[in-house]
Length: 173
Image (tube, rainbow, N blue to C red):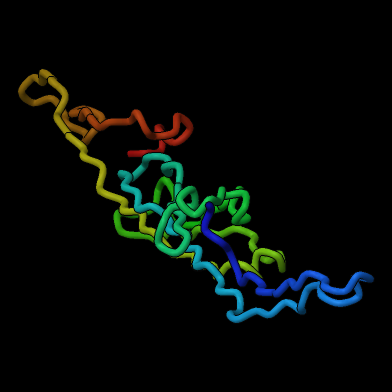
């Protein structure tokens, strides 16, 4: 037997005693408890990234009265959460630091509002400094040659660009 949701009516049925069946029947329904809304919490999952890398795919966890939707016999669609969207001030080139991730969904339908209390909890995206190794290029100069800055000397910049968008790699340094 599945767990009952909402307030269930209580009514009394009395069978007819008279031959015409004009007595007996069902009483009016009574409700002893008002409907108790379930608490739905949508929490953005914290994400790390390094400076210059594309933003990771944001995700969220959803709980219904502290448990999973599946444990409550519900799906994300039942809860109106099929299309969770995320906003954050962080970009691929945001400075190292901590920024919020805000989850949101359109749960304004009266049917949803009648059944659930929604809470949308921010997560955090932590942007770390990109490890960068700078090394001088191997150059041979003759004593007395003019050294005109970086063009003569040259440097190599080594970093992991696997998660940096190709269009942004040239501007990374």
